[in-house]
Image 1 (cartoon, rainbow, N blue to C red):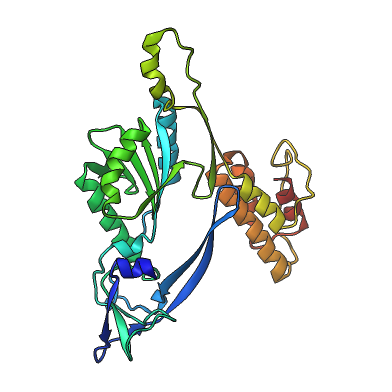
Image 2 (cartoon, rainbow, N blue to C red):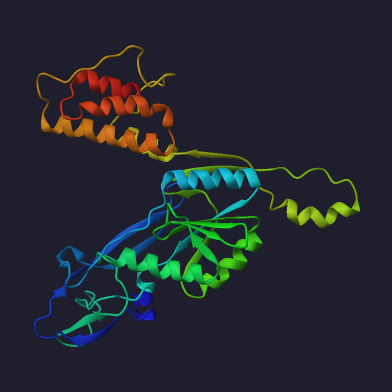
Length: 332
């Protein structure tokens, strides 16, 4: 609530005649670290944007999401060039961007001020259909003003025109890739003057993907002249970078009761040929098969391309699976 007031997200007014007011609710979530430990409890006032009307209180929607091919490309480039990879988060990102149309929302429950007053928004609020678009436009203006340009095929990637520095943006999660920590901090210090940017340090988890990084070991000192380079050794790049989803896999096994399964070396039995079931399964079993297949599809597109063929093959039977299809999924 303090953040909303500090950003001056609204002004209290009487609802004009003929205008529609949107509802709102408090949403409570927890934020965890890379090991799943709760590090913060969050409460957010969210507008009920599902009641918005196209052309009345919103016109266009858009949300910037970085493509998997893009972040893989730049991660490989960072590894090749010896860059550092840092992670940033924007606190209450959407409420930084000005609203583009007239929107009225009820006052936050428990913090009402004034009788029969409503909030006339001055900034975008979480829950509104246009908020992700407004946030991206606001962010893009800031980054372009300090020398960044976007990739033609992926607007979530920003490249600095004079420095070896790349920012990958997925809504309000950032990855900054550059030659050194000092250079990244120097550039992003200008950004932090306009948005509440939090430095999370070296990347550990991004978009549900876990990062295992190993830095290059500094070489042995040969003489006094090497003392000047000792500071640069601490910022050497990485010798290896591993992307994995161990937590996601364990959670998936627990969710579907598959902890007892024994690992095998291949995702599919050689020469297996499956057919659609002649007798339909119950709705519960059908839903279970679809959920398992969808979870494996997500895994295959992010970090496990080795199972992509098998999962894609079994996904063809999501409308009419039988027990043999469940057995095939268990092998994956």
